[in-house]
Image 1 (cartoon, rainbow, N blue to C red):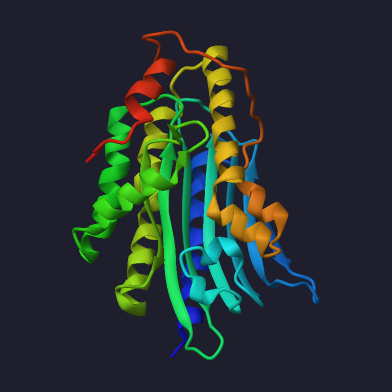
Image 2 (cartoon, rainbow, N blue to C red):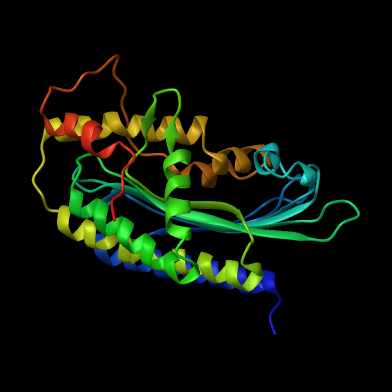
Length: 304
């Protein structure tokens, strides 16, 4: 029988392949597959597979990475809620993706599922799971937000009816730009440091979230990818992408974990959009579709 770590790794590699092969069909393009391995002697050891599609018909940039690394000590971003594990050697593996669409009517999406194990000095190994998915529209559609959240809820309900409300609230609180007093998007679900269902139950819940991703996102892509848009919509898309960059670099624990632990920068930063813009004190016209994004979608609300 496979050891637990190998089972998680096998699932994650298969998930990456399933997602990228499906997205390649939707886009009509192909992913570049980059197998990498950390050089001997570096603080962080391990390997991964970065898959990325750029300048596609549907996706301007779609990155999906798998990594499996070990290190001598957990970085600060991983121990802020577990101080007893400070300095503990660790093993981490996960799949993380961010898809930036070409058409401004299609939302950007993020998904991540992961496992981290650490062994405190003189203690027993500790293992926990994390993950989730969230949607960042440029132009809001209620049916898209409702579909995305319903799919997330359906993935979590078998593990307890408390899970979706908890993880939805957690997602709203996490994907929040404190320096802007602004939500990043319409949320989804997010969980971290999760082990309360034991290894088997927690692993199954993580798998359910990962397996639900394509069902949550692809119907939205299909509905919006051919909608008309012009220079105004493109300009707003690039402006709003700036918020995505700000969050990932300033607040995201996953980015901080990767950079603080000596991870591979090229793979860690695959979430960055290919083009982005900023403007000073931009104001949207009252009653415009752009203003509606802020008033009706970048707010915490019950979408189910």
